[in-house]
Image (cartoon, rainbow, N blue to C red; front, side, top):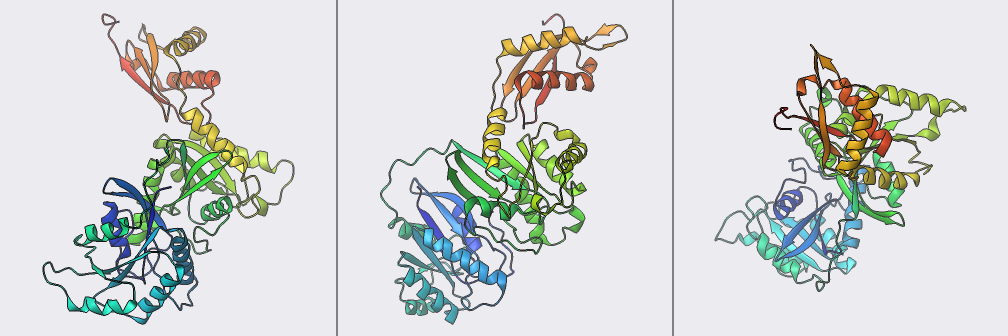
Length: 441
């Protein structure tokens, strides 16, 4: 396992800014509102040719009544338990506070190595004398850093590096399937992650918009290795006026890009809404293997036809995703959650399928013999051959005499023929038409 550095401290000392600086990209949402980072957020970084994981935590407010703040504290505590080394970040501008002292005591009790960093030391060359009061925390020499400008971050990582265990051969992560869990707010995405992980890894609350960042959780079982990416629920654009929420939609879109498989979650009580079709459309356009997950199935009054009716409604409303399998689950009770892993493995394999040119062309010959290619003003479409040029999603190129004659409906027909022969369930298929003149062929 890679070493893990956790950044902790009370709210608004600049943890997310430092996290982004160390990772080298804007992964963590940075906004001048205390409590913007709620969940733990992970990223991989590298220092002195050694890869490590970095976790940004919500601020620890020691004596807090607010449910969300108390939860953030709990999240930070879980991060501390799992960390190899902890960066405790303080703020020179506010100086040493009673909260800092309490957090320091909590860290000392954890028994983990702690590196003390004092942020907002933005002047170069002169040391702000206020840094010396942080010696009172009893955590050794404070390291002066500026998360905004990046000063001192090298010294900080050097100090953390001392606590890394000796480097062993780190496992290849090629066999890890990345699974993005997407959907509109409040469909139970975080509840599903928690059910799978068996720990309160993600904040679950009935307030829509509780999950703001896309949070990664590694999970392994007898069926394989998975990286679960829980994303912020996507709302309609018109409702997204909060700048933090805008980031969240962008982040969910980025999560789809990173994923191998997308679980599109739909609330069984509401059926497919307009927003669900937009969310599913993003995954479809990105060419990702998809599974449609109908959640809260335990809350539905059922007879023997209910599931078939719901399946028909989903197929009608998501007509462009006929390839995606539908599974009915309850994240609350755990009903059919185990089945998801077989499906995830299956659709991931289908999206990675390679078909030889010979097999494709025998399907093509058969298909064109059954249904003649279209003609226009006496000119008939000739398809010379077809070949596969990519996977995830499977991407085929058809060479023909005139691309204008290659009607959309005929493309659809060929795609259906390929699917009926090779399966390709759960994955979109890309078909590109290239024109060759008769002379060239």
